[in-house]
Length: 248
Ligand code: ADP
Image (cartoon, rainbow, N blue to C red):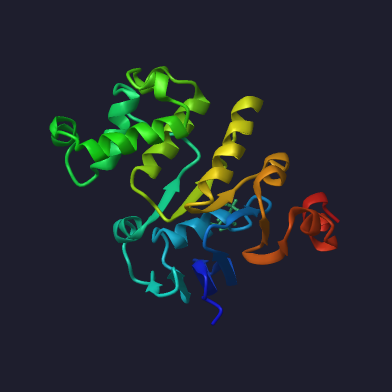
């Protein structure tokens, strides 16, 4: 069974927008605990791929399974998020006027309104989990600071923390190191490698240095199809990949 040991199985996915094929017969498997990077030139279909996984875009055909048995086809974005797929967009969307801790508190209580959530008393267990995440994202000392005062990189880390409080099994991250300092990029690489023990990660990224520092396995998309797959060294040596990146 090809789905054995996978966190995500996409098979023969097709997506067209007014006749334009954004994804064509795309098949992709991600293993449990894997850290997969998706690369490819602009327009390759990377965003559409993440939109399909998260239920934002419905494929015209094909199947999508989360874990070995959960059919994502027909599930709403909210249902898919609740099933354990978390997505981080490129631009951080934290609540700037609230403290770092409050942002994590809100993310833990997405079923409540903002005010109900901030008034609700956290259980000891919830508080411990937030403390643990603060340490993981290296923001323990900034817990009382308004999120608006954090650096760009720290806001990205906070947003990753906001995903982690929801205990997702699969994390999708869109260009996580764009705009980061070298030190922040290095910390992100360490963070992702440590997260990949407990979660599975799919990372869309253009920074090849970063990709090389984290990925076990790289998938190259081009014109809505998988052009190459394997280690970064292997795909970078592939003639077709070179052609796509360097032009003919
Ligand atoms: P990438 O993220 O790799 O840059 P996208 O998934 O954003 O690629 O886009 C793939 C192709 O599909 C592009 O040619 C883009 O113009 C097209 N596309 C994406 N979304 C839409 C849409 N909602 N309507 C029409 N065309 C779209």
